[in-house]
Length: 261
Ligand SMILES: Nc1ncnc2c1ncn2[C@@H]1O[C@H](COP(=O)(O)OP(=O)(O)OP(=O)(O)O)[C@@H](O)[C@H]1O
Image (cartoon, rainbow, N blue to C red; front, side):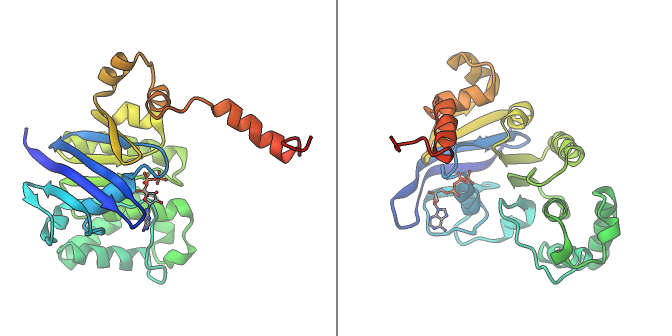
């Protein structure tokens, strides 16, 4: 198997200390990687570096065998669903996809054909000519997913792709990840929905405070740490066990029972 992504001693500091502390790993083509970690661990930062959105990092990132620093053509073979979706709200879905498709170097006819077909499949046909400002959260998410796939990329970065999707659409998306994998695509999937990550990932990378604290297939990690599911494994490795006490504290505060004698 060939290496599609290689990360070596990656550091990032926004100005208040390192949010990535020299992480290193390699990804083989055709795998689904579940990239997980607590809020603020550095997951989105890592993905933004891969996408060339953040450039002032230290270390080396190679994608498709080439150092990405200063490069942009590699992005034509990459698809990305960002955590926070910002679409051009005054455009319609067709106009937006036409714009995205052309950025990826597709000809107009191909973009139009694929857009119409994907819009139909994702059940957005009724809103095809509506401005994106009128789209619901889930509809915007579906459009972001379509945009990430329209150019048939080899490597996909999904940052919380299920946000806002209804149960049926989320199930379709999970199946879609499996089908993409069958096609040999590589998927780097970041999410807080542990059940899904556990089910679809060939390998889990767990980031805590900018450091990788676990890396391997779920079964292997589960056996090593004697945990039966990814949520427990996550709690164990991030050293977090006082969930119930925190919930109780919140209720005490709102009832006015905390530190008030
Ligand atoms: N543009 C920025 N400027 C300054 N600090 C930032 C910026 N973006 C992220 N950070 C900080 O970097 C750290 C990592 O953030 P990041 O968004 O990568 O975490 P994450 O693991 O994706 O978290 P979440 O699960 O909450 O999305 C956090 O402490 C965050 O406050």
